[in-house]
Amino acid sequence: MSAYRQNDINATSAWAKLHQHQRATRHMHMRQLFEADAQRFERFSVELDGLLLDYSKNRITERTLELLVDLAQAADLSGWMTRMRQGEHINVSEDRAVLHTALRLPVEDSLFLDGQDIVPQVHRVLAQMRVFSDNVRNGVWLGYTGKPMTDVVNLGIGGSDLGPLVVTEALAPYSSDQLKVHFVSNVDGQHIARTLRELDPETTLFIVASKSFTTPETLLNAQAARRWLVSHLTEAAVSRHFVAVSCNNTAVRDFGIDPANMFEFWDWVGGRYSVWSAIGLPVMLSIGYTGFSEFLAGAHAMDQHFFGTPFARNIPVLLALLGIWYNTFYRAHTHAIMPYDHGLRRLPAHIQQMDMESNGKRVGRFGEQLDFDTGPVIWGEEGVNSQHAFFQLLHQGTRLVPCDFIVPMNSHYPIDGQHNVLVANCLAQTQALMHGKTETEVLAELAGLPGDELDVLLPQKLFPGNQPSNTIALDKVTPHSIGMLIAMYEHKVFVQGVIWGVNSFDQWGVEYGKQLASRILPQLETGDEKSMQHDCSTKGLIAHYRRRHETD
Image (cartoon, rainbow, N blue to C red; front, side, top):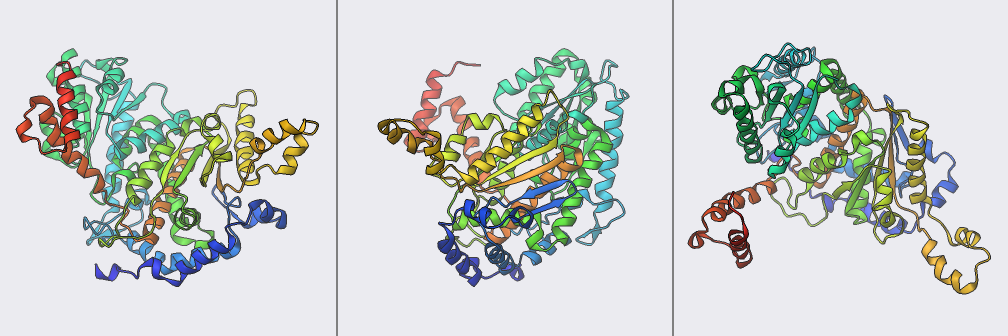
């Protein structure tokens, strides 16, 4: 592992030159950059298989890009890309390979991990998923009482929920009319209760998605679903209405699931990168094997672009470098994602987990303390709704907030020109954020107002502009384009982790709260104050719960 060590990235000349460049250009306004270069869009945009990245509305010049590419080279990005692709154990804290890209390799390819070709394993599980999904979709798989399935409930959390949820919702135009897919993740009982309230136990199939089959939230929901099913049918019905995505054969069998209906995935697949694996079973059930294959093919196309394209024209690398430019050198600590497509409304949450769980780190991959800013806060909401919520802050607030706008050029629902209105709003927002509104323009609007009113209104109507954004335009939301889009963000996160020197593939910060919760839970139930090793606030809250909680 010592071969993976690198010099401190913030001690390199590339880092110093970027700081100097930022200080020299920080007052530069994009309005002037566009006025000076009529070819700026052509110069700062890249297209791949119907996905266009326009990054011209950024506070950058050609020199900025040169320096950012130099930074990537100083971090040995090419070397890390090769190590990941070849299956080296780059997840150093857990001694694991990182091979979600292998999940979308064609069957004729090969990739050896620790001396074994894993591509046949991947396609064996895909074949198992295909048989099962075809049987469910075609009404061959019958429930305990002999009825075909009408509803599927995915029980998972984190990557076992958000990834398949986002893709299933995005690809709703391709979904089966005979099968409705639901997702339950929250340990809050109302999530499972409200979902089950609408379902028929005779025609409901549950997928328990947990690699270890020990995830507390998922198992609590699975046990609740099991009790509901058994109360309406019988214990013997469990094996016809539950399947598992897991590696724990024993726990799956003990639950009552036939191990033949367990779909495997591997420790070299991180949860937030797992939608391409058996975790994507609800996606395949929704859109079918052919659609899922196109989804994988879109991701593979982005993989080939990522691994084979020079950094200066590489879409994920460019997005990553721009993010570092703002987060680390401008100290802009949030990044907003706005999909102008209702089906993609949960995409910001998926990217939020993917990014913040990966790069929300304060130490480097070998435990060294970092003294610069790493992962940003990712947030966002669907357009046009977001325009009536937080866009006021983007346009006239005091913070620099880089944004990604995602918009399809064609809609599956062309209703009375509404898609034209949607796209017009998206493009208008990126233009307004970039250009702003000058004092001269506002004075022209307010011509004729008395001086006192003008003094009050003029500053209120000024827009500083110079707010950076990327526009990601898809020809249409399809399985292929959504595969490309999600893989693009995966690679962006990886690149940023490499440059910051963090391990993007562990998540120890998630574990501590779980450990404390396991200590607090019995104290909520028993109130044994002697065993409480907590601060006075936590003790007080436990006592308050004990006083006010109504016994279940």
